Amino acid sequence: MDEPDALLLDLDGTLIDWVEALEAGVAAGAARIAEAHGLDAAEITAATLAFEAEVYELHATGWLLGGVGTGELYGALWRRALEVYGLDEPAAGELAEAQWAAELAAFRAYDDVAGLIERAAGRGIRLALVTNGPSVVQRAKLEATGLADAFDAVVISAEAGVAKPEPRIFRTALDALGVAPGRAWHVGDSLEYDVAGAQAAGVRGVWLNRHGWEHGRHQPEPGLEIRSFDELLALCDSGNSAETAP
Image (cartoon, rainbow, N blue to C red; front, side):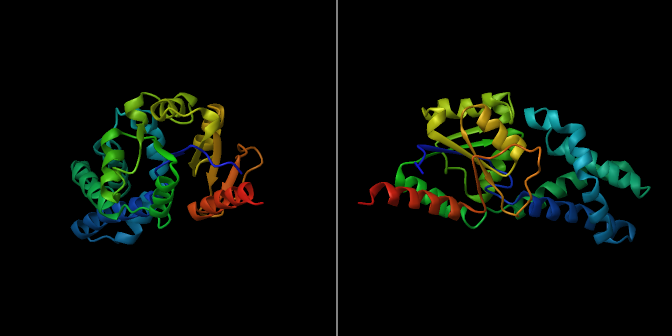
């Protein structure tokens, strides 16, 4: 297997654990409601997480292209939660701030990320981040996880004016690196956004399936499926060994 000249990398769910952070953020907001009104914090957390995806979908376009930030999105989430419990809406803004503060404290890079960055640098493989979301939010995540200086290029949908799975966002990253599509791989956790988008841009789409999800019959077919970055590096090592074997 020929080693790529560049790796394009997704952020949320690929480099950092956003689910754990989201749960911590919602729990922080729920704790405030519970303390103020004598309710059960765990119940509020579970109920709010149950409709979080629905609230996100209503604001997705604005979120991806920068018109909606944490104040608007999280405020909408907590207005919905307060409505469910028959409570006043004015507290939604404070709850949104509490959620974001708790998320920032909880964001962490997966354990295999540092090794990937170190090995890529040692091999001369260039790295680009290709991520969907508001600029302020995604850059804050990079700072919080110590990844702000890890990339040769950073492409954020709100800054680029285009979001995954549109091929143009991947081409923007390739242009920034000066690398041809056929010499790059994109690694991400979403078959629809990462794999399909990358492959439409002529880039090999690598599905990082950390949780062992099943591949649906009608989902895009990845060029490669891995469970960790350690597995990716091992595959590259085996390819290099084969090329140099007598």
